Length: 355
Image (cartoon, rainbow, N blue to C red; front, side, top):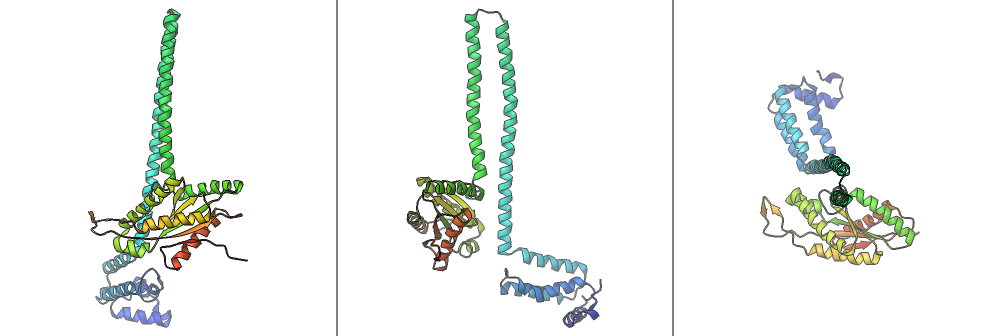
């Protein structure tokens, strides 16, 4: 495909001329690559200047080889693709997608196993009912003395009821396990997932508004999670940090019967049936527990010699008349960002702006 350089703007004609000099002027792909690294790359905010410069140097060094072959072009394009995808935000996105896919597959397996067990149980129940029916009919048709026949029938009924009672208890346990799989966050179990949080807030807000009982929410976020943990120690250690934080929050929630969930990323939520001032007191207790926790990560399969210390910023909001779930969490989130902007590792309570 020709470049049509004679009709192109002046800058394009100049580039075409330079590409012609090194023997790469007969394929529009070469011009597209050059325009990308010269003009478009600078617009990408996910790459810093040094990263952009390294890609430009790589492309210019490849052009200096004066090899216009298709194989060379494909090799260079693969190098560009590696540059664009092998980048921390991209890696984090791929890992997040992989985590979500694994969670979806795990949920699908749990549901499939549940359905298969249900089918198997139905088949076993049919066999049991058939056997019970045959034994009952044989007993009734035997013409035996009632004093012999009635105890035998009573034993059959007792056996049948015992089986169904045990099966009902087993299915209750299975149903609870499946419910837990559906409701908890796959990474931060036993914390609930976002869907369960939304359902709980809907019911808790309706109850609080109907009875006038207090309700508060905490938005909890790890300070400098990306730069101080993920970028330094890697995403595996980052996930372990979140699991550690989840355990601290779950322990606090368990003592008081509160609802803990993952809101998204490294943001966790605690919903409490107390007022804002008391929630602020508990939030500070959680903050101090996190601050003084010594977390020893595993790096390359070995337990680190020194602990990682991390802190959290917590925003607290109290439910006020007219608030829905979105506004409620938004208030806690706004208070949390107030802490972020004022130094981190602290607690703030949301205050509605005056008229």
